[in-house]
Length: 236
Image (cartoon, rainbow, N blue to C red; front, side, top):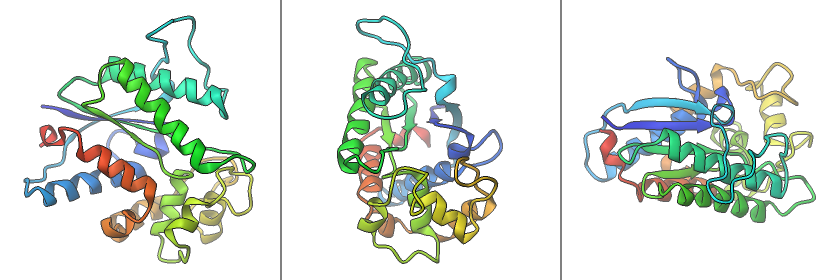
């Protein structure tokens, strides 16, 4: 049976064995929507979870040495993501599986967020191409960060989709999505620097997820369209 292979930046994204992280729930909601649209019987897919640190980046072409994760911003991050995507797709995703690699955009306040988003998507797609897995892998890149999508789904949110995706990508900003979630009580324990969500977030996604509303976010729409172009029916 084919597997849904999820690779996130850390365990808070897709969860650990036996539990579902916030983005894992978003992916499952998207698959459920696709199944309903195509009148397919939806079944819970077999899930394999990986994290960036478990996927050794390597250069498939012109190999010199792995790219270190410490290079978070700018071209260093794009090289890292390309190599991580290539290694993930080549070594962990079969042609029958569906592989999804997550990355936040993480742009600094002085940077062009949309340009950074496009660069992240392009880097991940190039990695999939190097591994010859473009037919079974896609990128999941919330704009500007996962927390922005989560904030958008909270009942307290009053920001438009455009305003949500223009929020700062730098967690140190007082207006960053993570800081706003902290102020609303959804993120606790050193919320300014650690990605530590409480169970309220999963509850919100499970009970407040609206596909039509999410499709107004350009980054979610891109993910959904990319996912729909894959042979996702193999998961059921």
